[in-house]
Length: 227
Image 1 (cartoon, rainbow, N blue to C red):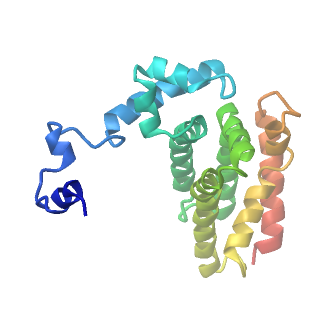
Image 2 (cartoon, rainbow, N blue to C red):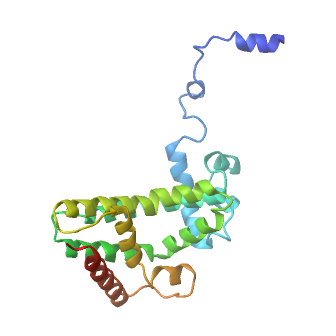
Image 3 (cartoon, rainbow, N blue to C red):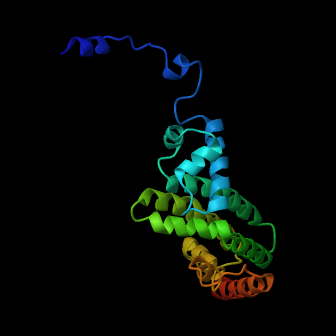
């Protein structure tokens, strides 16, 4: 063993933590204020230039950080973009879950939940996030997995829990609440989400279209599962 390795091995374990040696600053990549600064700057860049045209240099310049600092927090543009989308996604899902009030009439809640869900997933930034994740999921499976599990699957599970309450109350007859939940969410997107996701339809979804799609989804769902 070399003298250098011997000295390293004999160093006392009680040495001062690195964050304290630097005057109490958080370890690299963990400062929440710096992360917030980067996300805010990146949000402005992506909103202005779009995902494809924006570069990490643009983000570093707008966020007023070095590129080295930027890469400490986010390994690439895709992870940075999905981190921004995740914040909005989490707020959206929290708002949707609040609608699932078991004290309200079932049909009224289904209409309110489906309507709000369809309005939110039809927003341009949601569509853009889905396109980016689809584009990178094969080479970055962690991005696709996180996006699905923390987004669509979280909503499916929350709605399934709502349905289970009504099964227990005798209002619905459902053998597989997760499957039924996913079916309602798919029915509530029919003819609206995918045409916009793939750029076939450009215009925003109208209130009349939402009422038509959600009304049909609720009728079909209750015809299948109402006791």
